[in-house]
Length: 255
Image (cartoon, rainbow, N blue to C red; front, side, top):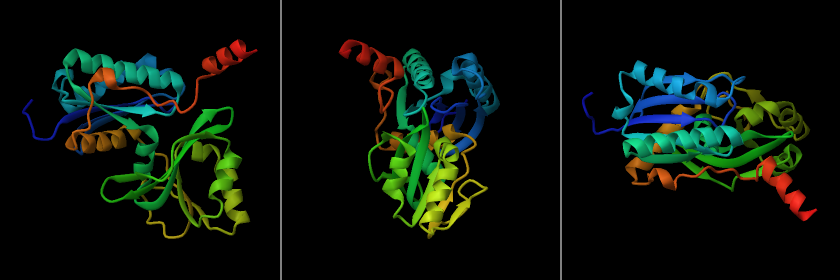
């Protein structure tokens, strides 16, 4: 394969239930694959990588930069994705760009003054963070990622008149979001195309991104241009909260 000034990027996202893979040359998407939300990422991740690379016309050794969603998200999924990327990048002696999952979700929401990115955290709770998203690829955090109950999150934002909600967590809580919007007499719409509107006022539920790994890759390319890539051994998942196993162990030792 001919070399280009723009790197060939293999992006892996296993923070969400289905997960996704993307192969891109710089910002140009070459191929993509989505996983199966009913199966473990360990079941088909390597097959999806192989299929995406074959469709792009590239081989694994052609990959110049690995990108991975660091979390928060599924604990098991994150471990599988991060370990896979670290193993491949170490073997091939390539750099890795780690991208927080909520940043990629915010980018998928499109330009807006405030995007609130939400992922399920189990037991009806959420991983959440808000951002300002500007053209072309600027995602500015407005707060820190948190593990939070939906009612606490909605109390925090109920006074704001313009929000784009994005992510699986937003879809899981859409009726609660809609109810608060109605209480505050804020318009609420469900958008039906990715980056489908320039929201000026009101609350909007952004479409679920078809392939979140695509947005992980875009942010990874920006990191590469800024020299913000890492050695594989320096990449670590972002969990935000302890795992259930860690919480149980803590309770056991403190009990």
